[in-house]
Image 1 (spheres, helix red, strand yellow):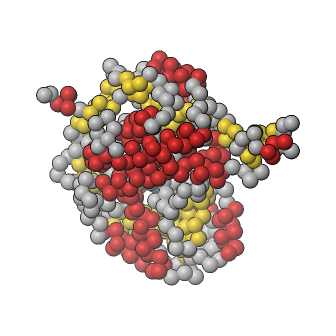
Image 2: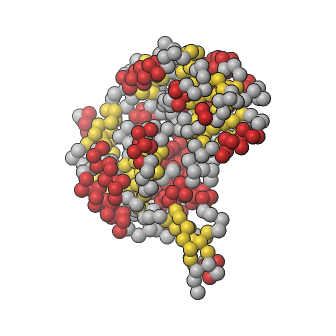
Length: 460
């Protein structure tokens, strides 16, 4: 049997079932070994699929919630298209470089989210609004919470399986959904959508549309609303488009003021940096210290240095693996940007060659000489942290543009300022890691704020 025939086929999932395109992309694992072939659909396929989503009916609420629960179970633990859950998890780990334990936790998290997603979405509903115009309040006049459209599109990332729990909220609220998967790791959305279809959602209600870059914008153009993941350039591109919700870098931070003993918070600080491989937008990338930052940087470096370099499928792995060339490219970028800083860890480089064509990126800790140093806003997809001095004179300016800020301080006036700052999206006070997130808690606001609106209704 040829290698080509052994590759896993990741087909498009269109409104009439699976579709294997002529144009296919070979996807390799982190060591460069081919694993799968991803079908890339042409523009006409996209157009027809999006038209089918628009024409399709929405499943009644109870039916779709039941289907979501069953699909979450099947996705996490069942056999789908002949592939068991352990096999799928191993493949994702090798394909994306994500440690297997993180893959497993993410998969179980998606399953839980599928069961809870509608109740979680309800946290965004205004207290004065109801879900259905048939409710008795409508006889007196009320607000009804309704969708802003019917078709929702997602340009998904491939860095972490757990991101695919987020768009389930749109499905729960009655949207038909189109997912353009990452070309790095398309297995997770393929398996999840196959599970959803097997458990009650129609082929014309949720689709998988892998495309070349040229066709990707067509998916967004034909959707009512969309969510797009990417770097700062993606955020800038869609910042003024009211139909697109960009999901960019987090630049999450920790502030340690002088009225707190940082040693009591060291576990929280280190886990905020390294949790789940340090790849998420809610991992800490900068720590600001009122007073001398050197002891804090030294302590962080000592802890992070103890992490072992292991292949991603190892149960003890913490660090994400990359193809060696990709890891070296990130290392070159880091070393160039870190010029003039004081390296406590990773100053000579961060690439650790695993010997099979892949490498892990070892943690890096660099100390800055001022709070407004530009490096403090550099976010890289591994445990990389910038430790900077902070003073009351510097104020909250260095802390802006932050997805999550953990503030370890007793200064309530400062906390009031941080809470009022619109570019600080989430504020955690005290011993709470920046990656903390629970169902029903907003991540970058509630997704429901984007998907839904209120409409006044009064009836006889």
